[in-house]
Length: 138
Length: 304
Image 1: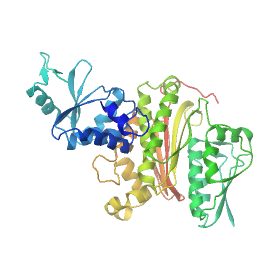
Image 2: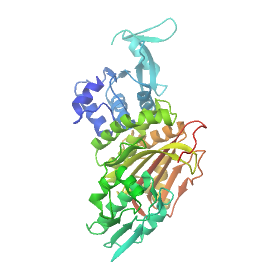
Image 3: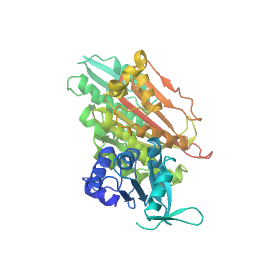
Image 4: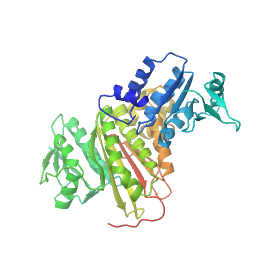
């Protein structure tokens, strides 16, 4: 989904989420259809390079200013490398869905458990016997 | 009157101060002649730095283009052409000497020929090109984990954005891989980014000068940006780029050095003996950034 927004937002055809102006354009497109305080899912499948500026401009700003819980999926290790320090540095956290549906916190440690609990409370995720939490709805 | 600015025979980050000293002696309004006829070698840092000097010289010369004598050695001038230097130099200098009409670079060492960076779109193009050209070299020749190539593109992107966001003018980037006999006897990949813009001190002055008081200057500005992650923007998420570059380089034992105005700061890895902070250097406009990522492990011997 993020990839699709990127294609709409940038003049040329790029698969990379780099530079602040690109990040700003993508975020503004996302925000247009996103009521404040919602639980939002962003799918990074198809996104190539994500740099720190774009990670801050899109992910950190959505978490800080717009959404209640941000659930990220389709992340590569490189995407995580960009997002994790940006969120952690700002004391923010998002949730990341692994390919098997397991959820984990990304960014600052402190806020993540509350985000997971919120999804469980809303029956969007369920606690497994082993203690992990899995997404039940997308 | 024309002011002669000699281009060092071995033109890289180490000889750059010698070049900057000659540049700094020119008076405003004086036309400059950049003499590279005796040049034997230039690193990407030297090439993009020379372009930055050319741009600044146009400004200082009241719009008149400075002169540039091309390297006399056919191999050297051919290499500069393949590295994309003359494609950019034509707009900035009145070039004298035989310049081959070679297209920039399909060879493996030039991962990214000298490329102008003026806007975010240019950064996109650079990142896209480097991913196509560099991944094989970074993983097979430098022994970097294939995952590291994306980090490399991120570091490159952030380095270029420094120009777009802070310089107030355009700049240039070049990326090359080569055997680095002098320091490591290993292959390295070098990213060089240069502009003739306002520099770190001017960029940060409105928000940081007071905090530093009498210490404020080029060195303090570099320290604030590189070590403390300070940005001129008050937005709390700013300053991520240089911090991210540092993390990437720390993971791969890389080096970053940034020269701006009269100072130069470096994050020095174990294999290098550079000075972390130099102040009182000859003044040179804008910012010049050098990133070096060495071949991983102990293997690798000098081939050239």
